[in-house]
Image 1: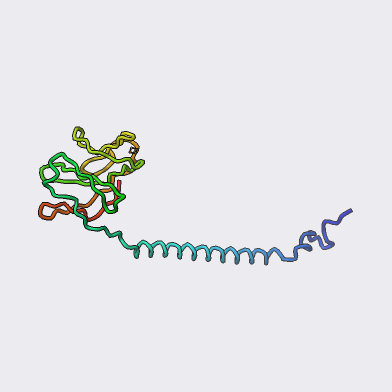
Image 2: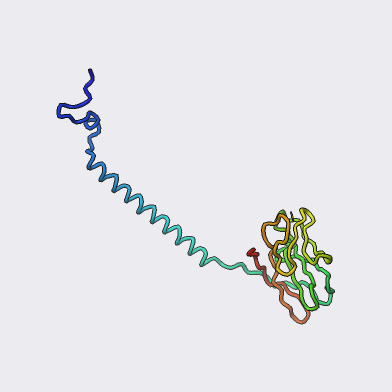
Length: 170
Ligand code: FES
C-alpha cells in the first residue's frame, strides 16, 4: 500500500516540494509587493505621459480666409464655401439684419450636406431628417449625435473672414 505520510507525520507533498510554507508565504508576499509597485509605477508613468501630451499638444491653427462681402449675402440667404480645406464644405447664413453664422455643412450623423430652411429657420439634413439650431448648431431632432462645428467669423469693413472652427461641446 502507498505511503501518504512520512514517519514523522509530515505529508508526502512536503517532501516533493521542498519550500516550506512559511518561506513560500514570504516569497509570495514579496512578489505581490513587487507586482503592485511595478504596476503602480507603470500607471503613474502612463498618467504623466497623458498629462504631458495634453499640455504640450499644439492647438490647431486655422488660416484666415475671406468668405465674401456682407452685401453679397442678403438677409435670409446663404453662401456655400470651403474651409479650412477644399474638402470641407461650409454654409454661411445671414440670419438677422446684422448677424451672420457659419457652420460645417457636413451633418454629424453620416456627413450629408445640411441646408438652411427659411421656413423653419433651422439647418436641416435631408438624409434622415436631422435638424440643427441656427443660433448654436446644436441638434434639435433626428439621429445626429452632436452639434455642427461652428466657423468663427470676423468682420473687416464689410467683409466676412473665417478665422477658426469651434468644435461642438453638445
Ligand atoms: S446624415 Fe444627416 S441625419 Fe443622417
